[in-house]
Length: 394
Image (cartoon, rainbow, N blue to C red; front, side, top):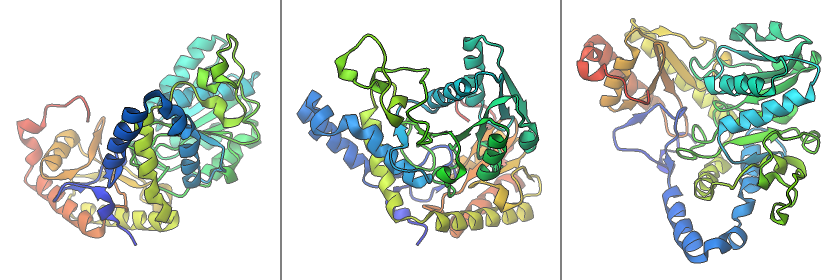
């Protein structure tokens, strides 16, 4: 039964609508980290890699993620940042289509994904091009010149959601490789990754999966391809025998070849514990609750805050688990909202973004949040100079 607020540390009186940027601390994670530091690192030192199973964490936690994204066991591994995983998957995809020169993405993709593509193209120096189209034009832009279609399923700014099945099928019909970024999908909406047949998927774990700031990213490779791909980042833990310390790289079998460097054990320990919350959560129930919360929020805001303009899709089937409104003074309005214990965030140039996580948000929270938002807007609290200066993180 949702929400399950007792499973999270949330300050009294705070309404947290920013889990799409950083999830809150699950109950028990802090104790597990402390115990790991004391009883494993502190007591066992270097022995922890063997006796405490640190070296196997990327596979173990990867299997936990696989359950949430509809992927088979052994097809997901953990480590590094999302940008690194995008680079790994994209470079492998480009190599799979050596006669094609276009990488297709859309203007709603997260900039870091586009930067990774631009950097890869520059490094390859083989005449590849990044083709960026509007989100609604992606399907029509897929043709037999495209090597890789690289799309974030849920737009980080507006929440607009692409159809995994339809776009993957279109990519495959054109002979292109499909790479999905699930940063705003994993833990927010039901994903049946294996059913789509896509070649690659990546995602982060500090948003809806509540792994904490800096939590490691994941990468999925379709099982029939895992022994064939040639990793561009040939790290020592992706080697078939890392402790043989051979001077020449030999890729490990399967998904393990997508490992690069030493796993972040403390961060992964936090994530492994945080993921236990999902053992008792049905993703279909979660999605239904998310849609209901978002619909309630949209209806209330539009009725009570006429200066805000909805920029998320009105159709819930085309929207992830967030709602975004545009306002010329959106940054200042969000700072005023945060100062009154309702936390969302801002994305340039004018988007106020609100994430809805039914694990710890209920209808009463939505109504109270809109009460505060209405006060901020009607009293023009955003005009106060103290809310005008932008911080490093918005």
